[in-house]
Length: 134
Image (cartoon, rainbow, N blue to C red; front, side, top):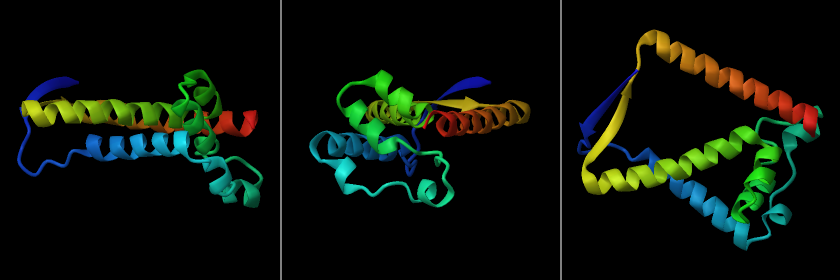
């Protein structure tokens, strides 16, 4: 893996700003609205009887909006990490918009396979955790 400092090119899509904005809006909605009463229960769980990979997301947003990180991690660790990563990426992309430079990662094909395999494994472990804990 190599870190490369790059100039932000015209037309680069700031995905961090997009996903981070969605995360911020979701946290604001969870803080200000009764989202647990508005959003219906999980159709996947009602149909199959097992938790879906995102089960507990509405409740974890409520916990995160109130500053309860441990409670959010207990409900769905993977989604909690993804939301926090999106918020950090939001800040990073906001800074790179003003500085004009960004850090890029360069992976070998082998490293990319390991990263993808690790992500799939983490996803499956999280789903197993959700089916056992809820």
